[in-house]
Length: 173
Image 1 (cartoon, rainbow, N blue to C red):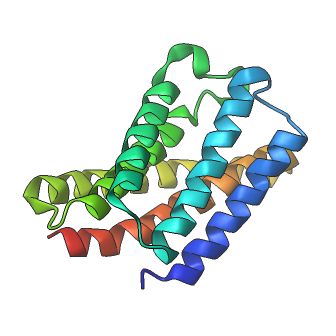
Image 2 (image 1 turned 90 degrees about the horizontal axis):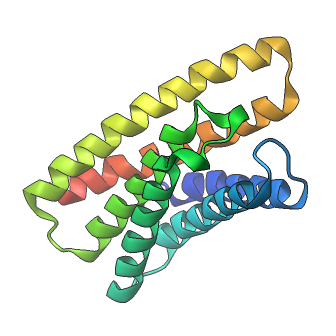
């Protein structure tokens, strides 16, 4: 299985962090911050479900639609918080990546278009993940705890999505 335990551990950590951010908000506050954290918790739980539970087709279509809409939401200019301007593309890419993963689970065999889209998703994950990892190094040096926690959670989720995308690409080709 797609290294189910690694995905589970990463996703549980990200979901727990999202719940912590909901209970003790900082950074992007208000409705935008709550929606963002809820989307990350839902995404982490969905990743756990993808590796452990068989998904009925209706659930896959629901996830595909929901995560695509979440990706579009992150692209809206009013969603970008002042302290989080550089990470909104990462959040959008992760949501669109979840839509692709849902598509691969629904359509069997996925076909060449899904495979090409999967390669694009993987490249996007690598690009935004690398950007976040580099951005994480600065606050680590300056010891800014909350920003380090935010970046670490984002890097962890992108890493989990990369781990999950590579085998799904193999299945889709």
